[in-house]
Amino acid sequence: MSDDQHMISKNALLRGGLAAATLASIALVTVILPAEYGVDPLGAGKLLGLDKIAATEDGAPEAPALTATVIDVPEREETISIEIAPNQGLEYKVHMVPGAKLQHNWSVEDGELYFDFHGEPAGDTTGYYESFAVSTAGDARGLFYAPFEGSHGWYWKNKGYSPLVIKLKLKGNYKVIGLKK
Amino acid sequence: MIARILVLAAFLAALFFGAAPEALAHGVDDNTKQFLAANAGLEIVAFMYIGAKHMVTGYDHLLFLVGVIFFLYRPKDVLIYVTLFTVGHSLTLMTGVLNQINVNPYLVDAVIGFSIVYKGFDNLGGFQQLFGKRPNTKLMVLVFGLFHGFGLATKLQDFPLDEEHLLGNLTSFNIGVELGQLSALLFILLLLGYWRQQKSFLQFAVTTNILLMSGGLMLIGYQLTGYFTA
Image 1 (cartoon, chains in turn blue, purple):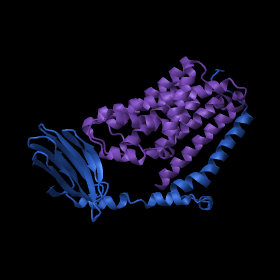
Image 2: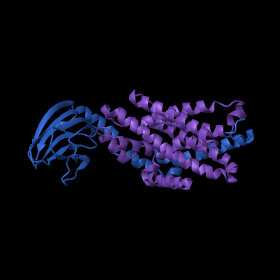
Image 3: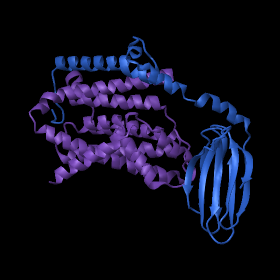
Image 4: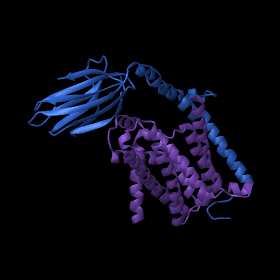
């Protein structure tokens, strides 16, 4: 017998195994399953108020609606050149539905800038926006999935003293909104 | 002295990771989700952090580790077994993500739960007692390591990953996993080392391994229910 185990008798093993299984079953049926999935065969989850956890998770506005809408928007791609005068800021936006995909890649030859990649929910009038990336880098690329319906895109500010040109490449399921001051 | 500093460091790390409420939910929390979904480019440190955090807050991996080193008294043995576990999970994490091997997360996590039950049972000499023969412990750690790696892979595969920097980000995630494992391991070893000097160790060793088995069974039930209902 090796020393890296602690052998116990068959009887103790049986009792231990039974205890482990009993404890696991009780925890699963009364707490874990009701809270995680709303599976509540004994009603214990309801009694403890745990069923609410599963209910809120299910209620989150997610998957089912979005797959249907994404297909409606055909994939497209384009390359855009955007010139920004010194000390000026510009926005380029596209409209996307939740879950829609956008492959993006932009770069600037040289110059100093600040950018904010963000989205504004459709129908919102409060001016709320959500930033996905903020930086002073001279290029950025990535694969973006819209978390909500609205206009998504970039704000660039030319912080230098000479005009700069941004080359933006897009590919995905979106509709162009275009440049905004 | 060094031991004390290590305890303190490990304790602070645990506090740091554990303080976040989302740590309770194993998987990837909302902030991380957003980062991964909007992620652009090579993000070495960010992916290392996500990997480390996943490991430190991932109780399934930790329970298995506790089981594996529970009766390993020699540092050399700890090193051998942890290395085998690391080789196993790194292999499937890397190949799984790179080759886009899609395994069902519920089933993988159920097997991970089973690995904990196995280790608790094995620690109590269950195989020897009931079957007269014990599966090769080193081989089993390697094999279950492979499943733990698939589990890690599914966590990353939930997200659209930037293909161009996939290898770099994935390697960073893997390194983060190992760093997280190392810090968790230090913490576990220190606690175990202290506990082994107490009379209560052997007394509660049996109970602890039964609890390990129970925890593993809970994970199996939890994941299989998810598989059949979701």
